[in-house]
Length: 134
Picture 1 (cartoon, rainbow, N blue to C red):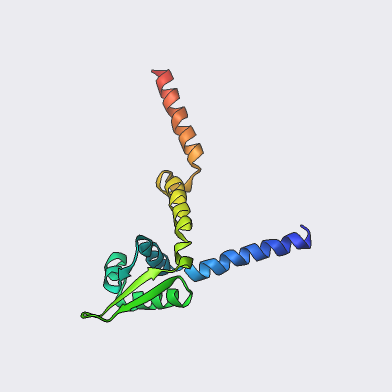
Picture 2: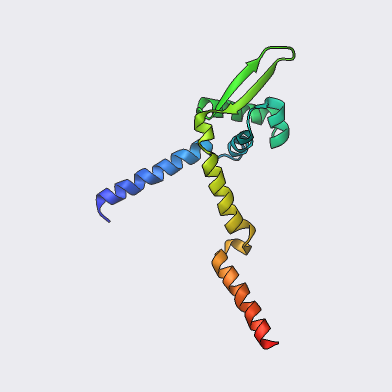
């Protein structure tokens, strides 16, 4: 492989690694996915994600610092803190959609992560063989 190709591969791999470092923790992904539905109060996020207050607070602070989430404080009685996605956070919607499609194809419909085309082909072949032998 020419050195230029190796450098390009390393840059692409670094981009993937950098991205995963920002959004890749379980709780960050859960919160980002949950906020795709719109703005939520802290306690709504706590209930919907099943996280502890401490974990959720830390994750929201991290996501806010990284520019994925914005925080809005409403000081009317009772005081409430609302969280929503920034444009950077909203830009992850297609990524979540693609992950869902991938999971539907590779995790839900196939045993042990086998190739869905192979599994479908085997089941069709088995059905044809059974029908022919009857």
